[in-house]
Image 1 (spheres, rainbow over the protein chains, first blue to last red):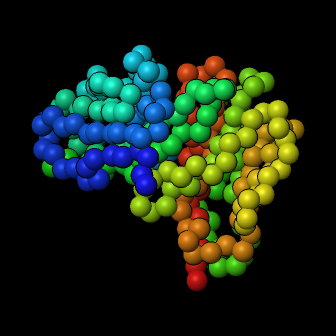
Image 2 (tube, rainbow over the protein chains, first blue to last red):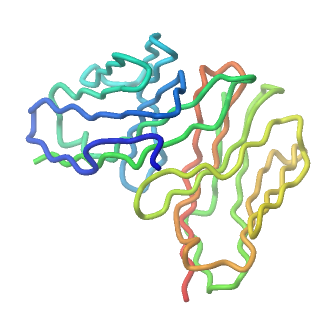
Length: 115
Length: 115
């Protein structure tokens, strides 16, 4: 059974029209991440939540926001998508557990297209 | 600064051949973790292995084996008797102890296993 679930699998939106991607987890992990992955590139971390604490990467555009209403759910909001925001968006979770740097568990991703 | 280099952009082998994927990392931290992830065409990132900097023992898991050499800052991944299902992009990643759980990915190696 999937433990990190991303919906939808494919999302199409119009240039400038706000879009929200969702991620849920059944692992009860306290850390959740959002990555952007463009074609033939490595995933790029946008931000992460450590419990309710939000941590933004310095180079993440202001156009990208995130919400984590509870442990299980995390949302990625793109306020005004541009053509350059077309990418695969990956959600991941991890636990701090006994030691830091536990493996991150990834969802299947949402592929976002901009018309 | 931390960095991961996967010099091989793409490798093509015939089924049943052995193949080694190279990974070289840079960090000044003495405590760090190294990971390998597999990304098949479907898009999800699948965790394969985590190794901490104090454990230089090589590891074997079925057809997969990993060779960690601190002297050369390398963490290479070998697939023995490759199969078509091994075709994917493989990412090596680094995480340092006090990095806010951030994964630093290499650029990935695309492996194509031909029948």
